[in-house]
Length: 49
Image 1: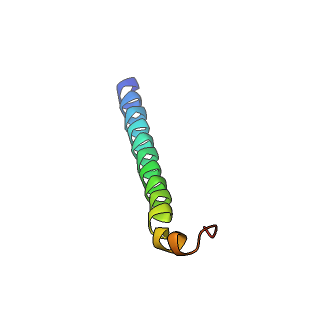
Image 2 (image 1 turned 60 degrees about the vertical axis):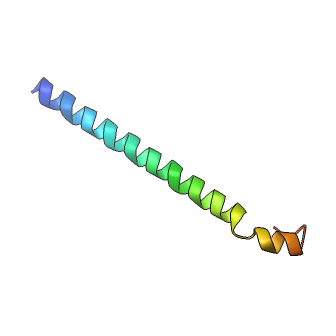
Image 3 (image 1 turned 45 degrees about the vertical axis):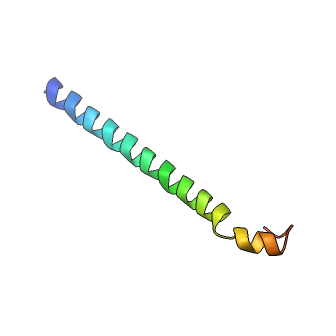
């Protein structure tokens, strides 16, 4: 029973780390997209982010 509990905890930890990594990748993608996509607009009208 202890072995099964340890395995379940390890699976949960792995899923938690995977979800955390996915959230970081999504956040970085949104941040990078927000900075990269409006760059032509920022060049034509500086000071307007």
